[in-house]
Image (cartoon, rainbow, N blue to C red; front, side):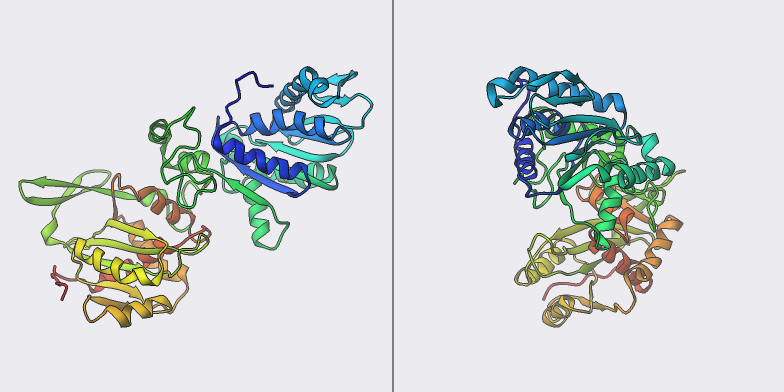
Length: 451
């Protein structure tokens, strides 16, 4: 049918299985989030309608996109496939008197396709399957609250109302903004709204990848291998990469933590002497590493389950001027049996003056069990997370917190800061909050040896 042009990549086979479940009525609401140029529209808006109507010729599909002409182009491509292969594969034909790209019907059946632009009217019959394919054209539209409101109202008042009883809806997007159509639907779900199944496949795999990729593996290596994706990230920057290629848009300036607050440091050696180079907008400060104190802050968790929180241990250096440098982050979903090994190994790696641990739940086990042979320090946790973060947020705003440039954990850490307090995880933010509290009690460097 595609004459070799369509590549049956692993992520597209995964999506195809979900579309089959939509066709069978097993999935009623489906959100699909994938990077640009990865085949999601080709499969869902071109091939799926032709296959669906070949198998269910009395059903109807509505395809919508950011412009009527663009939506119509998907209607035309799907029609052309069914015109060429419909009779041979399914025993169906397109009506000659109803074969326009934006409206076509099946001979001797009730089924067919209508297309429309987002924001415009949808005329004709209802939809057994409604496809909304990239309702946002570009970043300018995505960043316009007026346009986002317009799309939302169109979805609620026009598109959604075209669904037939027991009809299914599919929304396919490359994410541009946290308040886009998918963002608002997900926000409604959190408030008890209609449940949707969400497929979010980033360009580079993360932990617990839905299609079984190892962390760092590319989504569509036949077209974009991992190095090509990393090159794209370098060219477009972490903000747009997080939105378009990871499916996790965050406010450009964050909510509590602002991207403009972020400063960076690098490490340099002169002979055997190690220096931290603190880069500001105007100059670079050179600090001898031996004149800094090192400490760690921990936000523990105690399960390896996919939906659980992370065990996070962050390592910090404090300069004589009380600048705070984030040296390293250990982040893993770990059972309690691994806690002792993690705390010991991270201590041996960095030799911190202390390891600060939140004094509740799993942290109490660490404090009580390990303090005889590790420099464990209990950190009080008697206020809510946002209030606790205010101290470190103020230090960021003053420009006294620095991140290690090009660290492998840096993007995930900064994304979590920018999404706080509404992100999926806040474990790393908690360790930063603890650091902001504990820095006031740190004086001269001290070496603590493991007994």
